[in-house]
Length: 431
Image (cartoon, rainbow, N blue to C red; front, side):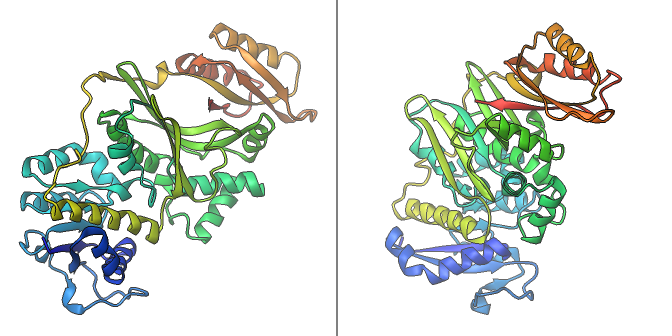
């Protein structure tokens, strides 16, 4: 093929970045592909809105999606509208029309990835989705190609820049959670409604995609244990630091024999861990493979340019496949039928940081220790951080490894003690 035509659906922030790259870097892309890659059409439902720093021929613009999907002149459809509907319908229609697809839509891939991938395989077309996880970090390509000789057993990811920025600001500037969130909004790092980010569900969507590629097992968001960062206080940040840890919102997937565990929650990481010093809005994904050992992928996880970098990279990969008639060369993903079960959160084992808020009076700590002991939880260290007569004081403990179910039962019992005045905070530790 001497020319490969691209149709873009969605002309928002990322769409503008993709269009700009295709128009301004056409010579560079042609050298990479060995054929011209031409932006043939741009579809959006709001073409009157001004887009900064881009000028396009108005003949390329359309509000009619049928000028892109099903158009025999367009080889690659790029879906950048986000959400499930009508994105799902657009992608499936493009696939049915024999068009190849690039998408950045993490929610779509998480919720309907298997259906879409099976449709692509049946139609003999490719679908690429690098920008759905990690912005400009080429983590999906690494899992699909670079690390395929490995059995991956662990995936740990800081994959939400908003939450990471908040926790970093709390640690570095001593801000409260609410002040750090306000600063993130002011700087444009947090949405007006940041619930998906700070409650952990954005990370869960991305973890589902990483789990599919890393372990060959499709998981739904509802299969993932999710806990956000709303309950993390400045005290927790400070006490964790004293113990030699940083607190990060981690997306965690681990394979043990024929089971996997998938969870998103705040986690204490040793300051020596590769992920502990990933700060601000940056993302990082740590993988462990049986041959390569531990590897870290780090970079900007959001924003116009990083996301556009991944989308255009996918377009170039697809264009190469078309140029050399090698569509389907890299499988979209490989199912692993050996994985039989998703491990329940109650069955995992971890060490814990525990912060108890209690009235400072004799016997309270002994009762707490007794409850933990009855639930087979041993204490590694303990410290009462302040002594203020007749006021609530924090008692902080680090435990040895314990079963999650036992810890939950112990915490419920501890919180029923009359001297305990606030809900006890427990944060898992990752070595």
